[in-house]
Image (cartoon, rainbow, N blue to C red):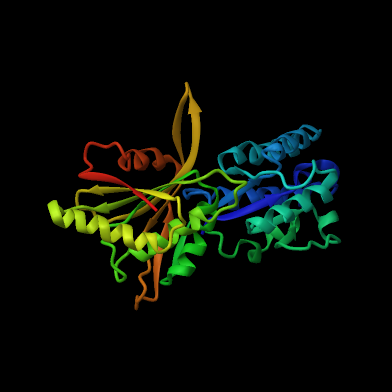
Length: 327
């Protein structure tokens, strides 16, 4: 599923990639893998050094004098803004590719990065202290792309499923989880929700705090039944979530689909706005005692995010009720 990738700025620099044709071939391979035709991008790219990495990539592309090469590299570089996520700086400002590689490795140590891509000339001799480092030419091999896909089967195990969602849990400023079978029981979808939110709240203090929402079916819940269900959900989540965390519980009319929508918070005219970046559709999520072999999960294409986010608006008039759960 979704995988975080870090690339040194030198990957885009002609001075560090003297063999033009193999270099451009790898750049094209990255473009096809990051932005599959007809599918959602299965990658987020680490914008290292508090976003300073993006400026270095822009400078590198500006040094390309060959028109054909510049167009090819610019096509990829210009689209990366759609999938970059800022990472706080760990070391001092990097000096050369070794500095950027060390920054990626150091950042990986407090929040894992799936792949760290280096130029061929540097990467073949670099010995990282941690992380899965590879050279640019290795991005043209099938092994690089293993597990990086827009849709596919996932095991019916809560721990393994939540691990696949870790990049979103670590970087999203907000999460909206929609599950139809949550009543606070050990045998329904509540344990999955608890594990997902626990992962999201368990993030480095260097990252922005996360807002969490849980949308569940409230069909038939009124009076004491509603009070008891909310209490059961709160009690179940409280066993997993850290003290001081909050989850907004939204009860909706009956539904059967399962979704996760996540994104970043932006400011406009003094208002904090939500900008959806990722969404995943689940045909099933794991339960503690699940006999099914696997489920199918799919990343939702970017052009469908706005409509999905609107459907899950916490202020929608269609909501039956909503409660802020404090832990």
